[in-house]
Image (tube, rainbow over all chains, first blue to last red; front, side, top):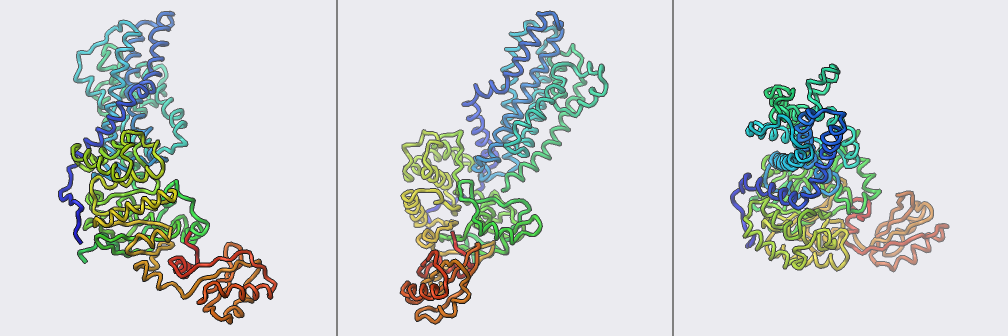
Amino acid sequence: MTSPVTDIAQRPNSGRIFLALLRRDINVARRELPYFLLRTTLQPLLFIVVFGLLLPRMGYVGNAYKAALLPGVLAVSLAFSSVQSVALPMVADFGWTREIEDRLLAPISIELIALEKIVAGVLQGVIAALFVLPIARLIMGPIDGLTATHFALVLFIVLLGATAFSVLGLLMGSLVNPQQIGLMFSVIVAPMIFFGCAYYPWQNLSVFPVMKYAVLINPLVYVAEGMRGVLTPGMPHMDLRAVSGALIVIIALFWTLGMRSFAKRAMG
Amino acid sequence: MTDAAIRTEKLRKVYTTAPPKAGRGAPGIAPDASRAAAERRAGSEVIALESLDLEIQSGEFFGLLGPNGAGKTTTIGICTTRVLPTSGTAIIEGADVRSQPTLVRQRIGVVPQRPNPDSSLNVRENLVFHAAYFGISRLVANARAKALLEKLGIAERAEGKVMQLSGGQQQRLMIARALIHEPRVLFLDEPTVGLDPQARLDLWTILRELHSQGRTIVMTTHYMEEADRLCDRLAIVDRGRLLAIDTPEALKARAPGGTMIELVLDGSGDGLVSEMRGVPGVSSAEARFEHGGNSVRVYSDRGGEVIAALVTIATQHGRSIRDIHLAPPSLETLFISLTGRQLT
């Protein structure tokens, strides 16, 4: 039988397909940017208004608190926009729409499809943090000890933090059922924010030693402390080597678990 | 056999959790099928495929015919690398689904039963991006997308939202998406479920044209008419087993002789059948009890002529007739004789 069907003899290269997947996610994210920013940055910004503007003016907290608060709020924006931008669409995809199916049929390994989701999540996390920074600075006014001199270090910590939370997004997105998504946010995400050293430096938890060591299982602690270390190094903060080491371990752990659960959901 | 587009050997799939259903738009699993599944359950395991051997030739239009829960979707799932087989092999266009899944994916197009377009993209973008996932340049993808949308009659919706398409249009978009990378083999899982009659006929026309171009097409269906009209060859599957495989003509010729007449009774038909076998024209008769109802199944060489005599016998035995079902020799009667169950 003669066949007009074109034969694609050579295997298309994975790098090119990976970029196509990324282009799709960037394209979609760009269209939804206003909603995305509203969803992920409103809560941190409201926090800034109350704790970085109102309370200092009322005299309940000192001006120095602003320097502890800003890096923490940036960490929250970075972390939760990363985790949400990976997890939320994935829960819908695996839960009911199955829209991800057209990408799972692409001639590329499932690991690379998952990795692309992570990269897209990191980009969105960074964008959210970049959006919050100038607004927070505007609301709070001058912040003692805020420096941007360690730019490379800032970038390093930002990328590590966003990656850790994107990979957590992969794990949550492939593990959580659509019915549990609300529960996930109130039971996991909310405690993570409040016990993530975002609103107080970790060292000050010495006032409550049990908590000081219990919160170390919370990945947000390392992102917030890392941000303090690079943005307001004058504030008490964890050693940046400990921060980086912890984040790398967290990334490796969540990637292993997340990839396993993603592959399981992707295969039927 | 070098010519085989698809070859499966001893393909077996056991689910420890619930097997995937054909699609959420699908009618739920029929009572028969869920019972079938329950019968095959060992502990919490469900055997979706027993040991499937299939060989589908290049350029063939092949149909997998069976009721819901027969294992059709699992078979398609394995062949399209979306489900891992428990054991056995499946080779698609020379590539193994287990060890070379990306190679398989590159050579196949898949049309799901329930359309799942990317709702974040418009109609045209769905095609252009899907092409990009196969490494096809934007220039080529745009030209192909335009041609496919025109051919499938949805060109005017190209810039529209996918969720504003009708069910039939979405299904056509899925076919366009499956074809954008010009695969050698096209898989369609119950493509006409949920379509109105006109959309179904339109889809048949499209599929016939794709077949005439020399593409291998594998389609699952539980509509006998569809299988009969479209397919070169058919496999009848039920409860994870292959029951028969042949051309529709040859399968129909294998159907038990004569017209099948089923009388649904208000009581047992046991005492009736011997007398019914004596009616001229009746080749066989058996009493049945299923779904909590009694019936008598009779095969007649004289079509419906024997009905009056059968009704008389039933009445003489004090039975009332609740329903009469009549089926000429067809894939349906073959299926019933093979499985003892209705197809739909």
